[in-house]
Image 1 (cartoon, rainbow, N blue to C red):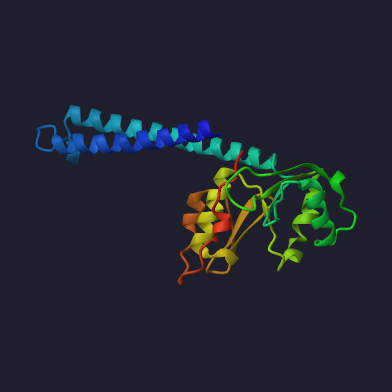
Image 2 (spheres, rainbow, N blue to C red):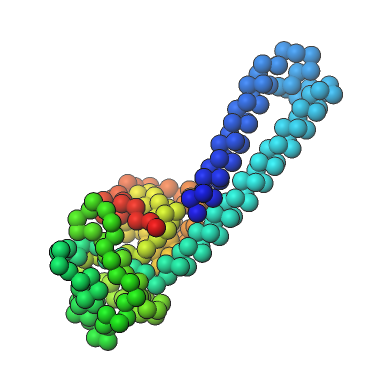
Length: 234
């Protein structure tokens, strides 16, 4: 995924550099008989503009294709995380058994009596410098995961929160959305990011261009808390 994103970034840089060089070339030949900068009628000027249009069309086409590839790969990666959740704020100890700890929280605090460690496929602390470190939990199936997710409001006041295990791209987009519209106006569900715009409409966003398309709020909202800023990726 990172390699594809790097290629996409390189294409964007190539497009910008091509435009910049063409602008400098046109400026340097604005006084010549061919008059490139103002679209002269000489054969050289016509060939130049045809070449420039062709190159820009090709670069734009490649850029769009790469964006589609990145978007599809991100969706596949998010699908692979569908059974996963992150638990933040759980006190950490050297002798802990994270699976037992998580099962106890879900059973006693979320009041899901049927939940046991057998409902957990994988459970571990996420490497990092934050303290306590988040716990990454992979449930046995999506239904179990969703049951925990939709009961997360019962954690209010405990200092523990639950978030979805977003991909790098979606995490960055989610943080940007919260910083723009406020924490209470943005949320995720099943890996999708939603924004409640100033017009009262709910927007599902996948790209930064879709985020930019939503009208700016008229007032300044609270910014995303530090807890949402650290990246957690594979």
